[in-house]
Length: 202
Image 1: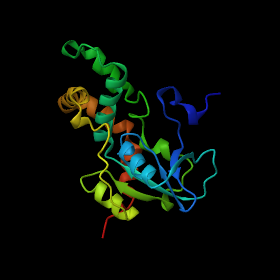
Image 2: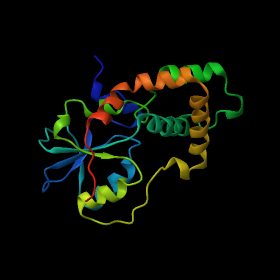
Image 3: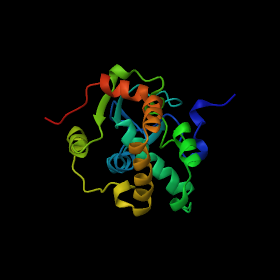
Image 4: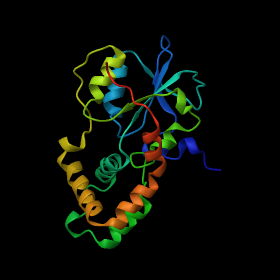
């Protein structure tokens, strides 16, 4: 039987990946494309180490970053194409190609539902951060620390990733069927985001 935790292991991610350290009652749960590279660098600088909450039996309060599902998917599919199909001829992409992509939606951990990264987590106990223009300030305020670490793998700073982002953004904006498919796939993510209270720096 397929192990859920290792579903995307061949793509480099194992469900349950998190970070913590011995002198904190917190654990950061890693959700790819939610500023995860930047957060891991920040926490690593503070001495946090990698664990898996599914297998390491961590009894700690979860810290979670959530992102608008459609925006995250666009960044995620751009990352997927960059990692695995960067040499594809983007000038002659067919309607069948786009039908396949928007029909399947999830191809790896960057494009999968955020809710799946929170399996067996008590959502009422989480400290949630919204990935928006205030995120870095809020997160550093929460940690009570300052850092000059730059964000990693930001789509807008990578011409190759931005090319794919714009291609799928245009298709999404021009085709209501594609938009409906994306929204339907991420319905539970939308519900989660609409139901939680996000941390705000005071």
